[in-house]
Length: 236
Image 1 (cartoon, rainbow, N blue to C red):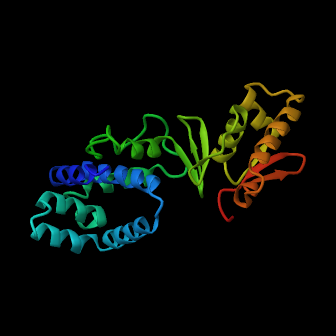
Image 2: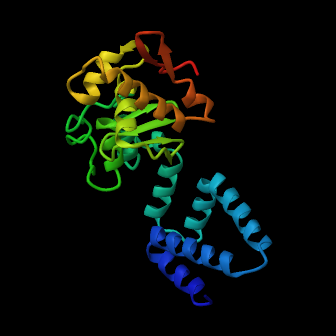
Image 3: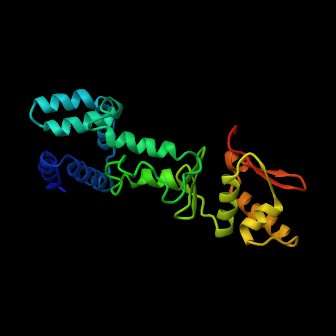
């Protein structure tokens, strides 16, 4: 543990991002190992202050020779990418454009526009922006990932069964309109028979049970009496 401090400092002088990762790992290890927690609380408070006032702190460190000029520029871009739209902030802004242009439903698999040379490096961690543009359906705090076949509420996996996921996806893709039992049954089973109405109701009921205790999700799905269901997109 004693060697981690000098090691992290040495790495940070040459590679800021790797040094920050090593410092984070060391901090967590020492937090778990030590009985006294108040020094760590003070460190976290100091880090929050540093993050809030990152630009002036970074400028002072660059003048003192602790940071290189390119490291300073990365910090400044991180705090305010809009101020550098044609240089360091270009990648970040294009990623945000990709996420925003996907809208609520996404454009569909392979339909991303931003990855066609607008987003300079779509193959690294910025692939998240492409996935959002193409595949992620987001409604309020609810996100549906078409690739993983999972649904998340405030980044927590709802752990839906396959049929529950299919019901939620279809309803969310057709918000604010009446979905009949026949329409939903055809989407789920391919061919709808009147006897499938009970199965549709059971699957919707199971999905609703997953939402129990969550006011926002509970009220997303309305029953249209003797007809079907309606998924509310907003206003909750």
